[in-house]
Amino acid sequence: MAIGQYRDDPAEMDDLEREVAAAQYPEGGLVVGLGLGIVLPLLTSPALLVIGPVLGGVVGFGLGRRIRDAAIRRRRADRSTAE
Image 1 (cartoon, rainbow, N blue to C red):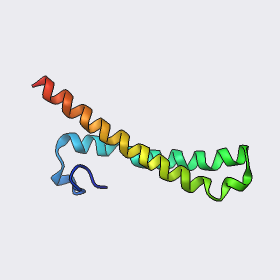
Image 2: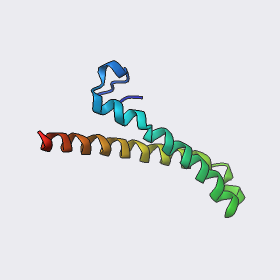
Image 3: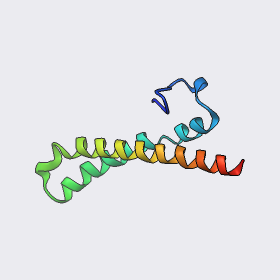
């Protein structure tokens, strides 16, 4: 998984990026999105069951990436104000 400037080697990441990457926000969002993409069509319209998990997974993964990026920005801002 790329963090920052497309770095996916943990040795190239700084300590802050490693902490946030370990939280696995995009992966967690993917799992939650898939789950919601299955459950919601079952409760509403079974015809949506074909596309629901795919859309839910994509949206969940995208939200997870945004949360991860925001966490990195927030921690960097906190670190710079603390110094």
